[in-house]
Image (cartoon, rainbow, N blue to C red):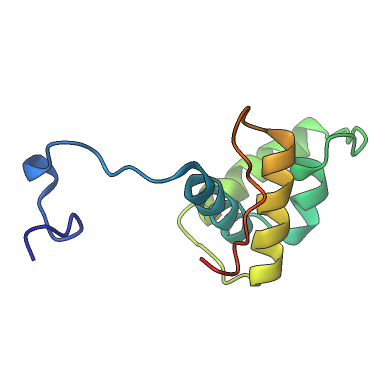
Length: 106
C-alpha cells in the first residue's frame, strides 16, 4: 500500500511521521521500561528519591554493561509501562495539554 508510511522508502516520504504527544510519552515509557531494570525506576522517575553515590569503578562497570545491553530489549509488564508513563507526565508536564488519558483504550 503506497499510502502506508511503513512500506515506503525513507527518501520517498515528504515529511516525517508525526505522533500525538501522548503517544510519544507512551513510546518513551515503553522504551525505558524495556531497556532499564525495575530497580532503577525510583532513581529515574521519582523527583526526590534521595542521592545515590556511586564509585568510579561502579560507574565504569555500569557503562560497560549498558553498552552490552544497549540492543537488548526485555519484555515488560504493561502495568510498569503505565507507571513510567504517569511518572513522565508528572515530571515533564506540557502546558495546556491534559496527559491523563485512558491509555487502556489505546
